[in-house]
Image 1 (cartoon, rainbow, N blue to C red):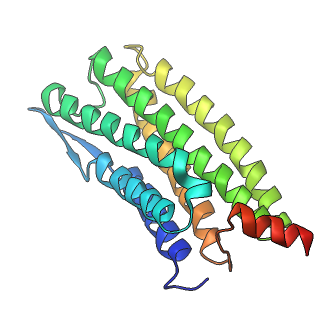
Image 2 (image 1 turned 180 degrees about the horizontal axis):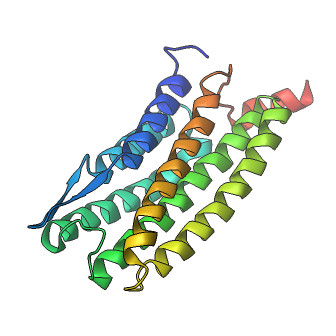
Length: 206
């Protein structure tokens, strides 16, 4: 892919945004807790990546997702601010904190799977049906895995399971996002172009 092109820059920023959002760490001390590399920083990069592509030829693909990323950013900032007051600890007993974590995770899944969905469309528009079919299957897998993670996260709210499941779910969600970033990285290895409806029709008639 052309390293100066909109797709390369946009999907490159997407990849790093997902990675950085996965690397946030809740550091627990006996006095309080704090967060290293807040998640909203990575999600802000995702928002800017989608906005950049939407404004530079990708409106057909990213117009709806741009609004979703704005809402996701607001939710992630609310989650971060609530953590400043309620502390970032695995054993946090606050139902508000746990509910915000689950809500943020589920909405991230909505946004990320929508991005995968438009990427499937992008592959198809560029006649790469093999890559489109493979990513479509991975998108379905991502939805199933995220639902399993959400159930585990909800179960971790139980007092007796909080410590064991808390660390397990945090690790699994990190691996989940690493996998998503690898799916996005595959796009950077392709020679793809945004297709307008007019261009797509012309290709179909040629």
